[in-house]
Length: 216
Image (cartoon, rainbow, N blue to C red):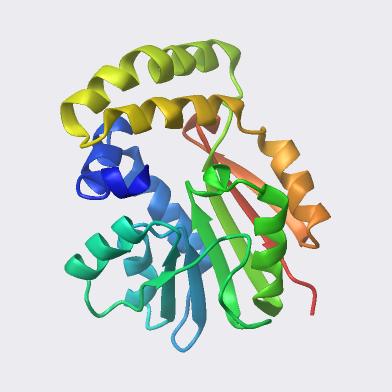
């Protein structure tokens, strides 16, 4: 499915989020706090656009994705990035390889969330950090109603206008609605071994930024 949307993926996300995805990614970059010489894993990196802020800090960032179509498009755009094919539930990296691991808008598309969180934990160095940016559940009921109406009624026709595979975005809307809320995801992180787990809502809870640490 993601192979089919690779060409216009970044543009479509920008349109569908009304430009908010740029702000969300800036918040991810702040939370990851990548520094020169550190190794950062950017999982579900797609075309590698999300990896660029980490690379600009001087960190060594590894964009990893399951979709070969996304990676091919990313290699065309950013040939210098070490784009890597990988399954989130069986990452092709050694234990304790990264100072920070992050995944944005990809965790809900992994078949086994618990396995992915354990794998992220495995490849993180002691004292390292995880940052997860994912669609969540608006906290104010009236706003939540409006948001859900947008997802199921407005998103499909907009996607048909700008996406190379609009049916994929119907699936995405459904996956957002069925995704666990903020507290449940925090519990899954703790279950996987992460400590100091916390989250912050963005745009009224449309998106939540979860963080955790691997004990030294």
